[in-house]
Length: 99
Image 1 (spheres, rainbow, N blue to C red):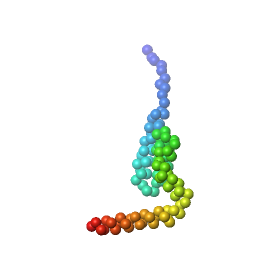
Image 2 (cartoon, one colour):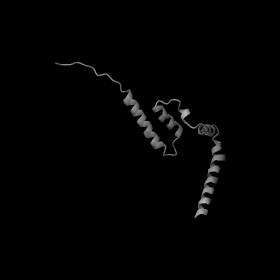
Image 3 (cartoon, rainbow, N blue to C red):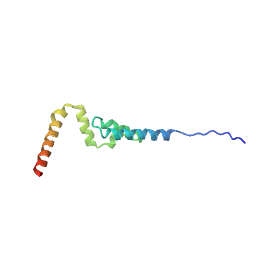
Image 4 (cartoon, rainbow, N blue to C red):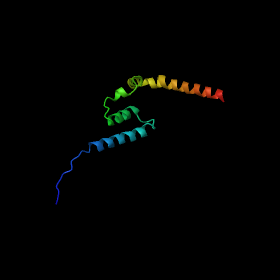
């Protein structure tokens, strides 16, 4: 007796798992490399889990700061870099006093 049948199924689940895996691997690489822009990487990771409104998952204060810097790139050189330098100097000074 021979049986004739057709297997039907979907590769959607496997495809979604592969996309998620790729996004998670990209996140692992990008999160350790300061040259990567973390926002699109986070966006891709969230989208791979079906979260298309990714903005609601990011801290609104951080998102606002990012938007301000993107719209006013001169802020980096005039405000943020001097602040970070001063902060590093204070930290070194405090560390030197402890020794």
